Length: 378
Ligand SMILES: NC(=O)c1ccc[n+]([C@@H]2O[C@H](COP(=O)([O-])OP(=O)(O)OC[C@H]3O[C@@H](n4cnc5c(N)ncnc54)[C@H](O)[C@@H]3O)[C@@H](O)[C@H]2O)c1
Ligand SMILES: O=C(O)C(=O)C[C@@H](O)[C@H](O)[C@H](O)COP(=O)(O)O
Ligand SMILES: [Zn+2]
Image (cartoon, rainbow, N blue to C red; front, side, top):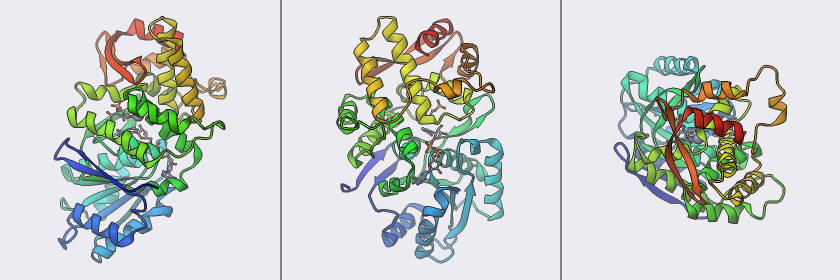
């Protein structure tokens, strides 16, 4: 792997994203980084690791050892949630908060979110709420969390009505990324990460070119790991956008490309569809609808379908899910979920629409027009 990179986010108080292969295995190096980022030379400061049942056994011990190497007692312990989107709930959030209180964390202490996007979103929210806010350091371990969720300060859990409906903007104190941990990430989850990378390709021509280069040779539909350079490029797109518009009143809405329809199918699937796969389907619905309306060239749809296939991602809701009697993917059901979209605005929704390869823009679309897009795009 290539050498490390450091990117600066200027949202909130500002922080750095460090992308460095081997960062977690380099015990003294990690101890130094944690000490500097969390102020562990102060003997009254501790950090708790929040992780999940898959990532914890693999990596929490290394992070905890690094904390203890900075100063015995610097680790407040490890809180483990069950792996999966099913844990991104208010109930699990309260369990984590109760565990933090049992560990007698104080306002000087910090949370280390070690895991995928579920851990990052939930632990980030727990840190923002505990005692009205303590610091959070993001250590993403899934590809999706590295390129997207660990950066930008969106924290949340899901409600019955939909995704991320309970949350706050709260920027981390830093993001430490070791791409070497992707070696233990299951293939399905590598594909999910590509879902958000292909989203960035829809926003940035340079990322699109790099995605084509890296996915191009892939004939099997089993996604390769992206290069460290492409991970950094993806983070750079996100970093630039959230630095310009931290609270999503303008440009940040672009990061929702594919998400309005994507969140609807994800919620309707009761999370049988992963977030990355749902974003892929959401992008495909929009592009297909725009092509059928004659607003985009057919080549853009074919290009997207090829990239999704190479990344091992679906273009549409898989037949086995459509066949399930307990799931409702009707247009009415999808619209009911989409009505909770955070970009919904009275008579319509601010939809992110692809307009050319590597370019998208936000346009207000009436609910009637969005219904028609779902009908033609699904
Ligand atoms: N806050 C944001 O800006 C933002 C952005 C994008 C997505 N999200 C959220 O992120 C979540 C999806 O994140 P995700 O795809 O990482 O899902 P996830 O957190 O469920 O992780 C996917 C799976 O990979 C496992 N895993 C993670 N790292 C591993 C590793 N190195 N080795 C082995 N297994 C590992 C996890 O245990 C889990 O089973 C969704 O809830 C989505 O809404 C948030
Ligand atoms: O950071 C953002 O802004 C994003 O929209 C990134 C998305 O990939 C991510 O899924 C986010 O959680 C969606 O946010 P939401 O506000 O639509 O819930
Ligand atoms: Zn997303």
